[in-house]
Length: 119
Image 1 (cartoon, rainbow, N blue to C red):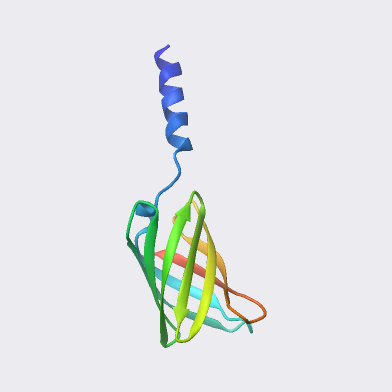
Image 2 (tube, rainbow, N blue to C red; image 1 turned 90 degrees about the vertical axis):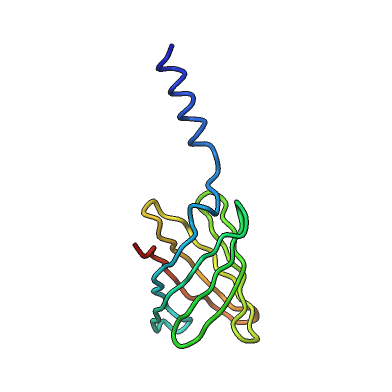
């Protein structure tokens, strides 16, 4: 009986959605632009609630800021870079890295980006 209760409790914990809290911190950025050229830099995710956050990128000599949100293994951010508005959608991997695709409003195509937590 004790094992059954423990198993049910563990299953209940596994069903709880992940919060933004487990994603805050500083990340190394590695990405590709629409044309396939690469860029790198750093991103900082700052928690604003249990599910929401802000994100700041310093990449390729430019910076951008956005708002972000996590839902289970999906993490997304809307951002402004100068006068351009963009969207990035990441998959949260088991190692804590974020693997995503990004785009800019009104442009055809997308880039890729991987955020790797700094230890």
